[in-house]
Amino acid sequence: MKQNNTRKPSKRLRQKLLIYFLGFSAIILGALWLMQTVFLDDVYRIIKTIGIEQSADYISENIDNYNITAILDDIHRQNDMHIDVYDTTQRVNFYHLYTSREERDLSTDYMPHQLRNYYNDAKEKGGEKLFLEEYTSVKGGKKTPHMPQSEHLRVKNMTCVRILQDGDMELMVVLRWAITPSASTVATLRFILIIITILLALLSVTMSLIISWKFAKPLKDTNETAKRLAREDYSVSFESYGYREVEELNSTLNFAATELGVASKLRKELIANVSHDLRTPLTMIKGYAEVMRDIPGEMNEENLTAIVDESTRLSNLVSDLLDISKLQSGAMPIDKKIFSLTTCISDILSRFTSLSLQQGYSLSFESSEEVFVFADKARIEQVLYNLISNAVNYSGERKEVIVCEKLADGIVRVEVTDSGKGIEPEKLKNIWDRYYRADKNHQRAVVGTGLGLSIVKEILDLHGAHFGVFSKVGEGSTFWFELPVYNEN
Image (cartoon, rainbow, N blue to C red):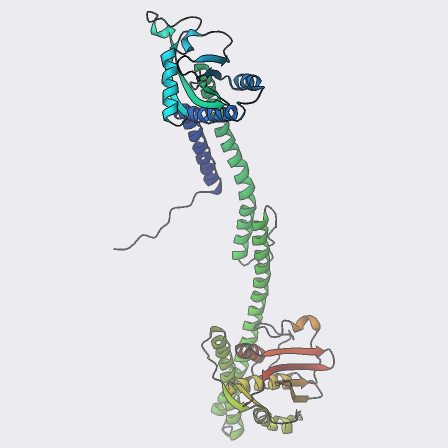
């Protein structure tokens, strides 16, 4: 059964931000509604419990203070907390020393048996009792069982009883604090929550639209410009604005556009140059073959030699293109062995002997001693051949090529110098590029295919060797590379 890999279209940034903001607002509002409605009594009780215990602790710390009455009055005024202090030294009748109630409220007065129970429970629990109690209060008068239920007010109190010692006197402090929020308070909180809910929903929608526009605008512009780049319009410019990530992305895309433009231009030049190099030997081979076929007496050694030479040149060009591809893909491993670099250079130069004799080239080799290296001999020979061939191609009218082998601090440096017109400084950094040609007027190479420097770079990179070029316009160029000298010790 064929699997369907079609993906659903993704939501736009604006839609996602709106969903996220609304979801965030819903979570906050849900928490507020739960805290202010469902858990309001619990939260209120926890707050009151902590407050009444702190007040009891403060009274305990200052019970022997001569100004204790003022302290009790302050606690009462600040917290609207009822405070009563009894002298329990006699253990029979409790003497009422202090009360914070300015007017006697019979509904909240303590009965003798109630005070006795408070005292006994506190004693059993180590001197403190904390509990909830509920009673019916009638505003403006006594509690009456015959009054309608709607006239009664159900009140919950948090009561803390603590036994204290003030010298020889034993005291019982009773703190009572109402923990039932009034109906008006609850109604006010709910009204405020409704207003907050509406405002937060509107704010979420507005903020999501504003922020998504600010986020999406630079990304949308980058996307539109990237589409032009995909259509091979390398003149595009990505405007860096918005925020740092977009600026960094646009800077990277600008760099990529520049590099792609250069690569495209060089690729076209490579195709044109390679096509020229391929067409020339094919044309010559075809021409010589037709002459030998159509004209009697032209089947001679000279024409056959020309066909063989052009076939060899064509084969070398294809081989160089394949070598570059293999080297860059890692399909051509390095096989290192110990060999004489000095002998290798001499052998390469001997291949150009006929060229020197026939066309007047001067090739010389300077070396102080024989040097051995640990490297891939076949690949290093390829490097030397390409560098010398390149020097021959661009040696100019003087036709002088000097190969120099220098030894210093365990490193051998090979320099290949030509007597050509040199390379401009701004072109040196690109001279090793696969698609780059310093001389835009392509000429058929005297020896080789014109791709030698690209192969040299790939081989030396695989060896981890240092290499480079320095040139002076009008005086020629020197290509060099360095390898560690092999030491048996």
